Length: 482
Image (tube, rainbow, N blue to C red; front, side, top):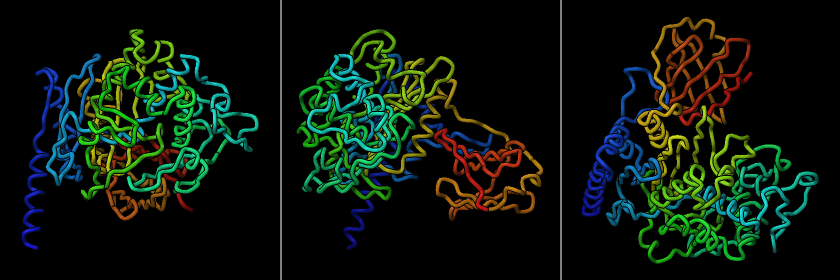
């Protein structure tokens, strides 16, 4: 027993020591940018002079993140990259340039580009009923599709009216469900079957099921398996030699796949992802970098590596939700910012970039507790490279008379969280579920919770809802419970 404890202790020491070191590559001028990012991570909302800066290694140690690789793309080239921690803790295999990760939903922009390539070839259509292109399986008619039909554009933009369901992963020894079994909710699938929540084209709701169908469209239109079609249409075209949708991994990749870990550093077994275009990609940050470089080149220079300049406008555009066909997009002045996240058990990742600046950061990790780190990296990149958006916001703490805000003390519902705001002397406090924080005033009706990187805006009128801005830049309402 003592021997086992000592071995575990030694392994733990080795693990955290390795996290404090990293392999970094890039030119000297680029590495200066990297060092500024690596060691100056702060949340989006900060009180001047009070917020402690953290490093990437600090986050890995604090949040039990076993390993990650980060790369930065600048003007069509990889400017710098860095590796941290372990791909496999027990085997003492460190993360490196060849480590393969499960990319989860980063599969979606790759699949979207493959589909747009087939649209350009005349084998698929963005705006016709998908049943005209599907071969064996057809979208069943229902009350939601009487007047509006499911189209490829609506599938790619998450406006098809299909619900989000479809997320389960399987052990290698399990019976793996087919495409139709997953859509029908039949054994061995353990997820509910295909389900509509609204009329196609009416609203946007993220849908894994929609992208599963995109994969079937690609297979039917190309006359080959979805995985083989993407090899040809995307991976080979970009030189992505360490990427696949095959679930029986090629030997040259199988031996380099990272082990995924839970938040308390317990390893997950190798999983099978049968949902194809929705999230079954195995890849590396460097391969995804080649993908991003090719897309931006197509958009800016008519290089036509993946798509023509005209077709690439369906990837990077300033339109409405229905026009966002591969990434989440934001428009700032003349720039287009793009982002996509990926998450499966034991793996997290993101792509975040600026079309106008021709820059992007890509991070892949074999850990779960990465949300705070990822948010801070995105802000640090925007700050270091002087983007006009997504940079951290710094505030002075101010003194205010909170008597006028007394009406907002009480109980609130916020995204399923239970909030209680109380006034204690001349201060406001909030209990979020079971955690208590002081609200730091930064303006007459605005407060920060620095520890949670939340900004609360109280209405000046008679409204009963509080606007809450989160670290990822999204906002939502906390509604008072009468």
